[in-house]
Image (cartoon, rainbow, N blue to C red; front, side):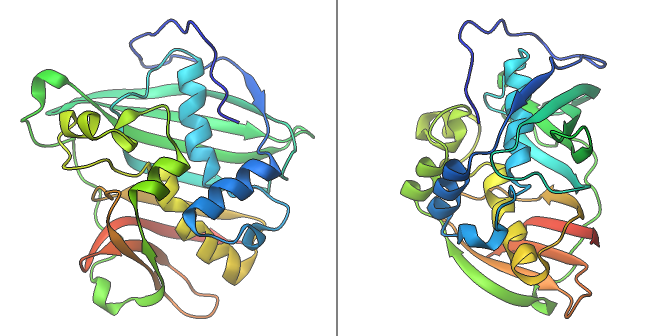
Length: 267
């Protein structure tokens, strides 16, 4: 997982660009290591891959196809697990860039990736919109139209757990790739006071809460990255709903939503 080829020829992404087909696995040892770095019990997911990993794997698929992730910031992520992918099971990655839109800070890029299991079944679909900042527009504000909030009032939610980010935890999770996640100078150059966690890292906490409660075979989430999570932030995992009726889940800091997910379905 996340092995990078040398001598990648970088391109400017464009609508319709097709990623090269790739195969990989989520290794048991790697899932265990990364979840433990996050402070999450790997047993929450049993012998299946945490779908949060497929956010990063999709980004890396773009990198392997020549689309740099350096400086990019996740904004919106759709994550649909049609069926689980088992740990150490080889799967196939296909996808394309479906939209490029100019925004005040640069451009918003939307890609859609399909992960197919070893038996040929569609397993996970990941659709992502990210901001590709233009260094010449560092002082500009705005990254396009903002989707309506999923969580209107954090104080009305039920707290499930607390999470403490630290520089060691964030750099231990991912110390290569996009430098805004581990290098102070790169983060400052991107307009952040300190390194920020990758979107997928934050989603682990949401997915772990769902898996602990439901052990689902399928899940359909619309995930929104509302505020950056810095490597020294204190967070809480909050849920809207009780029993089997969870409708939303979020990471909150200082009483505000940082990352939130609309739960469209759990099966």
